[in-house]
Image 1 (cartoon, rainbow, N blue to C red):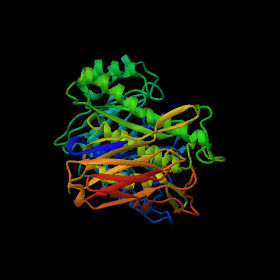
Image 2 (cartoon, protein in one colour):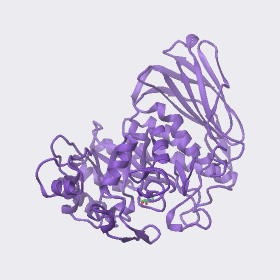
Image 3 (tube, rainbow, N blue to C red):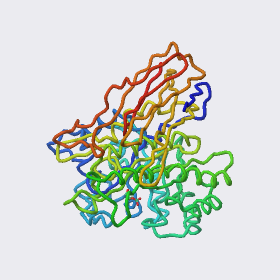
Image 4 (cartoon, rainbow, N blue to C red):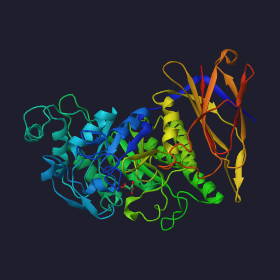
Length: 492
Ligand code: AHR
């Protein structure tokens, strides 16, 4: 079985924003995970922990979505500005019923983005907020002239407006964001976005709330009624191995749960294909982007933790989910222009876990680190032929992979072997490049145990290793992928 890489055929550009993140006021994501306050003994800059910022810079986080999630449609941004000691305390009703003291607000979020060097993606409130409130937030953020909101911003210590491109008009308005019907939300979207203004040189990319998973009717109605008013539309899909009532544990799971998780994660491909077909009907020139701004695994919370905090461990299985999902996004890069894994720290498929001053990078983090070479690279035509991975009376592809060429001309191939029992040999016929003069290097992430994970005591139990199980014969690259592994090759 031979695969083919046509290195002279460019299929699209992998928008770096596919490597985006999502951080909500949920559990220990914002508070403790990011914000510790200026007086904390945990080393911080302006209240934001340094170790987390350093780790996020390392994986080149391009864009960060905030403040939710479900929290976004309950969030009133004026509660989070001004002197911190005067800010309102409220209940975070969605997530754990804990007190939200609003110490992390607009200024702190923009400071976080500046420290990471990423773009902000702000999600406005449609479910319980007003048109005026949303409009004033954009004015506060981006208006540089004389106006009530610009003056308020200056009073709070920020004279210059910020630059904000990505602005979401509501979140999950089919559910926690107001339980709306698509026709109703489409009308509200048209109304609210009218007052999301472009001030000065700032150009807002308006993002409509899209469907939950396979709700194709929601996509159809939104595109039919509101396509001309949006720049992008979202899609949310979580990989839940069991049922919502009994999702399954993050570690200590069975082989069948491994298989089912990967099978369900692969469903993202079908979802994007079908939603793209609907979008093509109304937007044949592909002006509008599809933003998968919530994706990742969702398991039962770790025993003994607040069920509303969604804290879960992260194992080799999550690394495979990340690797195969990013490969799917690459494949659809002409429509998928941004994606935001849920969520950055201590929540769901986190890239970082913290406990007090301790920090652990998860296997998912390592995949984002290994794959960052694809950011803004040209997607190349890779026709991958691999066997099937059959178990429990079902079959899925054994290997998924994509290839890209970066600005320096280096080619990167990312390959996931989903099979937990056997290595997989991939033979790639290299066309459009001279294989004879190639230098190939590689990195792989794998382990003996299905649920290998990092802890605060053993933070490096699973980490990427140099990989050299490949050979070239002048026209072919033959790679021996270990079982249950994520591998990235560089061809120079
Ligand atoms: O990411 C957790 C929650 O999942 C978000 O708040 C919501 O948008 C989704 O249902």
